Image 1: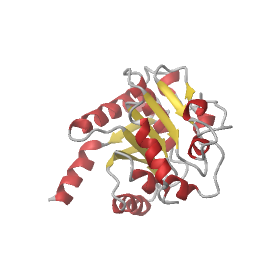
Image 2: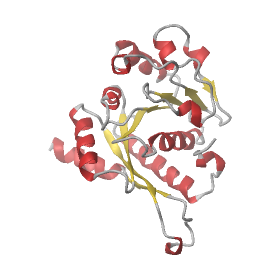
Image 3: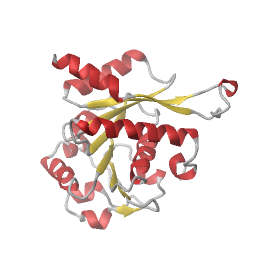
Image 4: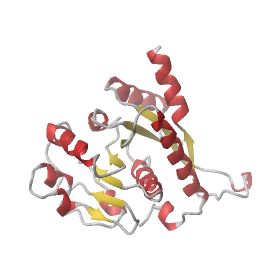
Length: 239
């Protein structure tokens, strides 16, 4: 399972960084229960799906029942990351061709389940915005402690904004040295205009020089500039 460092190397510094982000999300639960979290970015290739999968795994390791739902109905990748079939999935459940129980996967990680995309529909935005989708996600809250929804880049299409309307929080992933500042700003403004509760951002693919620390390798280091800033900004807007 390529990219799943929290499974392949749980003692690595990067896995520890994911656990730090997990802690931040847990603290954000103090005022509002956060169960449904969607993850997006400004453009493709910033690593949002990898971040989501690893983060979901860290929650499952806390004995929390976790579902990863592939809501990227344009370019689904969750099934490839976990080496699963995508013969049926979310779209089949929404179209009532299959039941949720027939499509959901149990993984080798205890408490971690996955619902892949299924057949790519001709109308992804309309499907994600449907009452059926909202009702389906709400019904899953009784089954799972956390639901992580992978969504397309908000800077490309509006799907992530649609999903944010029935999510409790949104995480924004930024690829280091890959995203233009203005593009990131516009993407965040687009989410905010749709009422998304932005929990925070994750700076992904940050390279660290070999000599800068004996503790970190020259792979890439997950860093977080997370919850507190997002919460403070939200309070300022409300004031």
